[in-house]
Length: 88
View 1 (cartoon, rainbow, N blue to C red):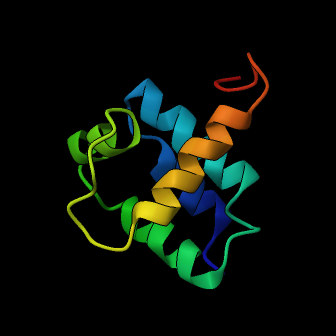
View 2: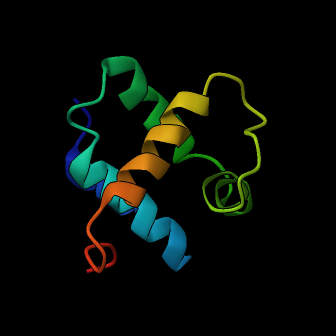
């Protein structure tokens, strides 16, 4: 398994919306994800901020194939969070 603390550091993007979404998935969905989804998440962290923002917040379809399910899980997990629990 990849170092959880290194992943946490890579989730910090400097764009508050991305920080919230990525850290929330890391803390609440990453460990339950399959090995393939965990690998995809690590790959997702290598994307540029503008692409991540467009896909995770703007509803744009990802240019890289096969990420639809993971992106949906990140969004669904955030949507299911209790109001006020994100960004704490």
